[in-house]
Image (tube, rainbow, N blue to C red; front, side):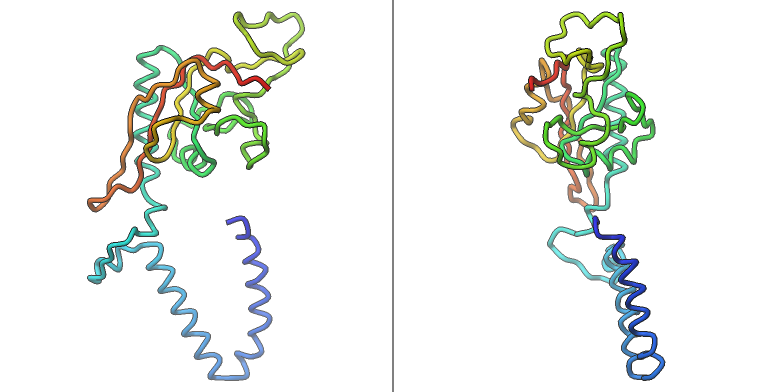
Length: 226
């Protein structure tokens, strides 16, 4: 998807290249028309494989279009889980996803796109000192912001930067990850005082599981030492 913009340029080059050839040869025009029709048919089938099932075609392998489905339903279940936990705990929870694609999809389908500050995404990824993707350049839950002159520091703050303060220290979060694994990442386990599983979200379609998310309640954020 990173090179998607290049296809617009390639399209203009292709039009320029084939224009004179299409005008000069009926055979080339017929081949081009067949190629366009085949491309349209393939695109429609790839984006909506139910058309093939209606036609009586079945296959045992995993449907590639499953990657496009189930995000809205899974996010709705996650949002309800967060709402129920917030009501029980009496505090707001911020969201962390295990990967950028999951964080982006969840942020897109959230009904309440709650942000923790100016420029913050609705969903974070686990903190890291490495620059790994666009989330590394957006405001993060592990970063420090300037402390206003004369303002007191939070009680019990362990890790600090000179004249800086982390606004997430002491807060709780929900960590979401794909699949079912026995342990959470070190960046999550070490940054919170306690991490406990609170639920599993499963999205089914046509008798098969499209996606499975594990959800963990992470208590008392304390930042990782540099």
